Length: 174
Image (cartoon, rainbow, N blue to C red; front, side, top):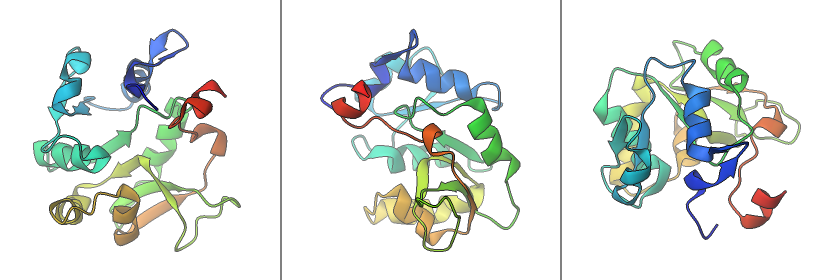
């Protein structure tokens, strides 16, 4: 992207402010996971420093799970500006005691089937996902999508317009 996505403006808020505002109505507490280079911009909110900077969302998830191991973590990447409170309510409503995570299926037909690609950056991770996440992190297998393939996941059909992310200047301009 060439710049910090958290600082991009969308509807009068930074993407970070927007993500926090979407999470706040649904969460007992909202924490921002960040590496050392981002601490200044997250100082307004409770934050959890990445256990090892520069290793992406997996470092943030593992850091959060170590911070509060008994919590379920609703993970939302800042680069998903179309996610709404309603989107996250769907994840929470689908919690299942037999599942280690709840995630949206990314298949073009919207069917939540085995082997489907899942959206890892707008997902709910139960406490039972902590051990597999930590094992992958220690092995430097840093893909959250890879983690989801190892977990028991409650799969939800997506609303594709809500799960768009902005990873390139072209996507941001669109």
